Image (tube, rainbow, N blue to C red; front, side):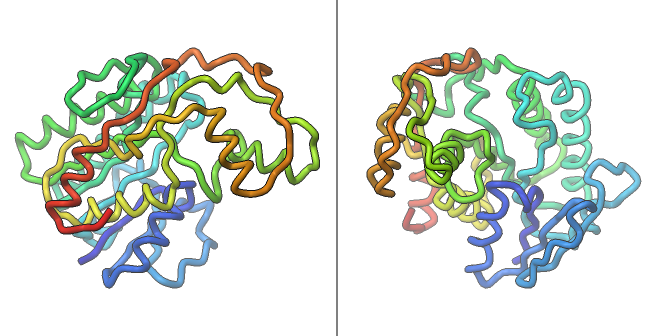
Length: 283
């Protein structure tokens, strides 16, 4: 089996590649031209512009059986018009071209932001209510791909990813900011009051799930990639401190809460676990 991955140099992509390298399959890693010097000795590396309409992307990716698609530009600016005005069109034409050329299975990275400001435990049957440009564009892309399925037979796995943390995360994330504050020897770590409930998952676990879904070769549809367990941001930070022996004190209430997400929400992972169980995969 051959699996291609886009967004390989990103936070999630690097961990997906590491998980794929543990499997007896062929791996094709797409990298942007500006990252062409990146060494990836355990797989085949290809570089081309994902948004170049003159390219046969399926052939460029060496005709994979499945794709794990993580690439998306313009982040972390969720409110930018770029997502709707430019990125959405590029993304759909790229994926449509792959399907029409013969791609059988695609795992697409969605986002929990597609649920919008809805609170509580969120499952895949809840109608999305995206409220920023990024999540709206993602949701429209999903709808367009579902419509494409009426014309072409392929497996669509829309992996709605919740909050991740781990090695290589962006500097703007709370996990990376905390590590930086500790390394710089600061006495205090500035954060919100931390009362918001979220669904956090180690990126290594999320990468494992994405690879398992790609290997499934079944039409899963929307599936939450999450822990299924709500935890307050404050409790999570305290756990990180305890695990690493950090003594830095927390300056609670320094930041306001984000206006693009509800105070309390987390994912329902029962569909994910059911799919993996049916595949006899120990999650």
